[in-house]
Image 1 (spheres, rainbow over the protein chains, first blue to last red):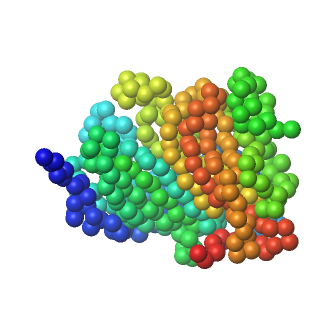
Image 2 (tube, chains in turn yellow, orange):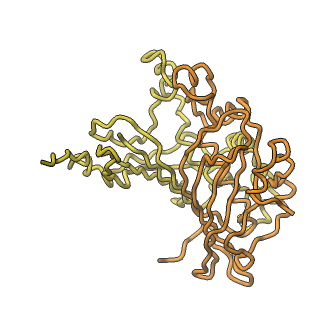
Image 3 (tube, rainbow over the protein chains, first blue to last red):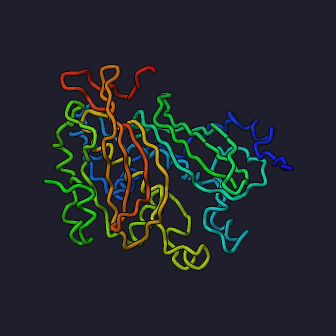
Length: 183
Length: 187
């Protein structure tokens, strides 16, 4: 007799598809110093990042920034936030350094007993480089949640979180989609 | 004449570095446009070589983007607690490198539109990283040239750490400019 396995894509989990987090304004603006540190860290010496005269002659008409630089701006914590690193290690002396760091605009947790999270891949789409001085906003949503069955017959979930980034002129800058496996 | 990826991977690491096609800032300034018409399926993109990677490179990235995950800078934590082979090259750094690589190939008038990839093998300090791309398909639409690429980042042993695909939009010779901000043609 075949035993019917329990689905992990419960109605509560399925209901999260399409659910959005709050719109978050990244701390600060797209600024010179962030750009300098970023381009040096990725070892990209593109004069379009720093030579105003050269950039003005380009199709962009102004300096640009590395294609997905803005997707890291959510990591900037506003100065009024409690020190997350001290808190993380107070709560767990063996903290991995990010476990206690909350990112603003987070999505509601998935109500599942599948707690192991594995990175399953990333998509990026780029539409515009922000300008120096731009404010950057983002919003995440559960784009898709699906159930799969492993080779051993154990069900698991794939979760796709889409995050859109735009500037103060409501110009779409880029979209990321991060897929994770929940086992 | 540039070496193919296959030829490059047969070389010892110190020889690989001599075949780095990563442009300087000055070379980027003068880069000539690759047109859709000149691209053929199977064609390889220039290969960018980084490294040998050091803990300092990794720490610089973590500091730049405020990523405090200890597996990228705390060796005892990475090896003893998380049982990793060493501190790990950040996936976020790798995808940023890839985005710059594709931006460079499209310039000055093309557009790196999108990419999709997975993080597979772990990369550690001491590794040399080869960023590569290969044309797998091309088609024109809406007066623009769409080039689909297979992309990745291999280490000196040929182990692939970030397999994926990408779409770069190139101008057609005598064709219309690629719009900026980029607007894809309707389906």
